[in-house]
Length: 407
Image 1 (spheres, rainbow, N blue to C red):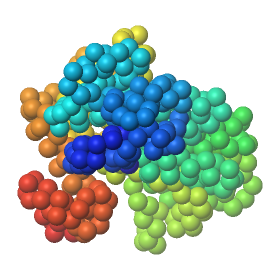
Image 2 (cartoon, helix red, strand yellow):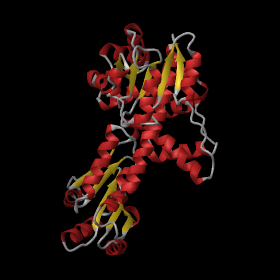
Image 3 (cartoon, helix red, strand yellow):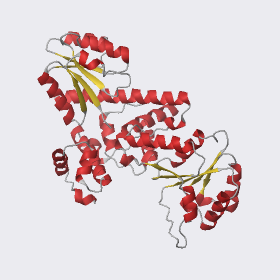
Image 4 (cartoon, helix red, strand yellow):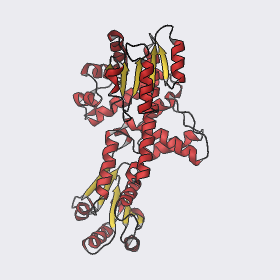
């Protein structure tokens, strides 16, 4: 996910220095030398923040601030002040600036202010998206999958599959929300007003399967962990599908369905019948950039359900969250958020580490994930992280990681 920061500064050397500082923090700076050069990029859809000098020839930083507020009152603008301009900066804060920094500012202070503003911006845009989705009745939009490319692709896939009448196979790791996705597919389909019935394959017998199919008539039947369906029941389900059946079958599994013809393996004819429309839910480890957003959402939900004020989520907390692998996916993250909201957060061995050490843990986990996804191919991993090869290898050395260990 690209995180953008628009730098508006008329002094070329300072503008370049600010851009370099943000690049080293893995941010994506856009630069402009004046208000005129920047104004066309300032839109309500801009997903970043603005860092602007106050004193500039022509239209100054205050004019830019007013213009940005007119376009989008929730767009964070951080003002840069020269020595002696602090009273002006205070005036800017009163006028609605997000923050102000005095030049020359320390790199750590600059990055901290920008990252805080970016988190605020991301939350505002996500809240808008969810509100819009709710108003439009878009169940897929209300799914809290995050805003990564993989999350957006999943939402689009769910919408597309829902429009068909074919059987569906949903694959995902434990805790990834398979049953929730199945329900959303039903709600987005032309069967939304009919029943949505759930059946656990592990506890099903012929009678239960038949009754579930009948109860889901004109609606949808979700069969959870269909790999546990016994061979006789697989044959029964296939027979019903090949005959007259009103219900749409949506099957879920967190295990690969082995269609080998050997005895005891999943019925290949049934598999190919169900696999006509496949939906794969990416694990959290595949899209770590979604973890902070999801954690904030789950904490807010848990606090609301318990009638509590949401606790402050500090950078230290997010660093600990990001440093974990989350094999339990959304369910495990939701449980952690609930404990955090209740004030009984689990403290891991890294809880007493300083910010630098915690950020190092996060960086190491992202490097490992990129190498896993690239199957140890260093160039692909570096490209995925948008890092120059030398920078990527320097980070591998720092964290004692070797690409060949992931092949």
